[in-house]
Length: 422
Image 1 (tube, helix red, strand yellow):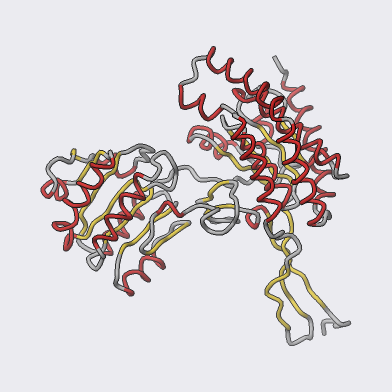
Image 2 (cartoon, helix red, strand yellow; image 1 turned 60 degrees about the vertical axis):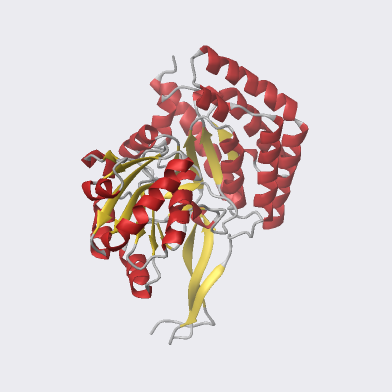
């Protein structure tokens, strides 16, 4: 077993190396970062068979340890999945580099100009489960944004993660950049997670990617700031002025396009004025798509085949083909329901009423708020970020899908011409 002293030593070494690498990376120009990413993509493609062989060790261990089919699928690396990882690195290389952007420059009465410059966060710790492709995606985003990253993947993917991280470190070295800008916690000891999330001397932010229990633990124990979301209890509200054909299309997409994702709709709210016309049609469409509905008493009066919703349903992220349905009497009641039961992830209103749409956008306090669109659009790629490292439902320092800009911060800059303060 790894001793507490040894765990602390490992974290200190990783932290010191990452901090030194971060100091270099913040000065690296866009061309050099892109060269490293393209080199990484080429190496992933060239060493595909070696990565698949490493993954086979994880797959066999997973089967021996009784991992279910869904977990094994997330764990598996095929030739096409490795090619997709390589393509992902190329796509990130093609994205605009946010580092060094200057914005909001204004002249002050003193004669100075004041504005903002975008700069890297520094050292980012990524803690994730199952999917070894996260090793490449997360590292690439951190590199492009000028950061150093410490990766701690799930123990079930240790061989795969070692192989992928090794490729990326060689790419950095080949391009004359510090290979310690990408480091993998090369141990399955869970105590190292505890050290990483408390290493405020070395780590500037932690980003967890995984199940709710992992994120709850990190949020409770971390001393380092955390970018996270816990639940995706997303709502669609069908207003009295909604185009009902549009509302049906959006409801089916928001629930059934992919059910096991954080931006899938979990609760449908319907204004009483249109519930009688809308709910039977919507229920039939969702039933054909394979969804199971749980409704309030008023919903079930209109669609008797619905199961009765319990109080717990309004606070449940199903991540499954299950939807809770409630009839409300007003926009105010819909907004109040979202405030009481939502998780600040994504909400959408379906309405042709401009005033209602604007009120919903202003008053609903979630990281993404939509008007006449499916909640499934709450995604970094769909927002034009190119890629995302996760979604934040917090208010500091980034909210919603986190792309390259979210892995940077801003500092004040002042441009003068010899001005002094009187």
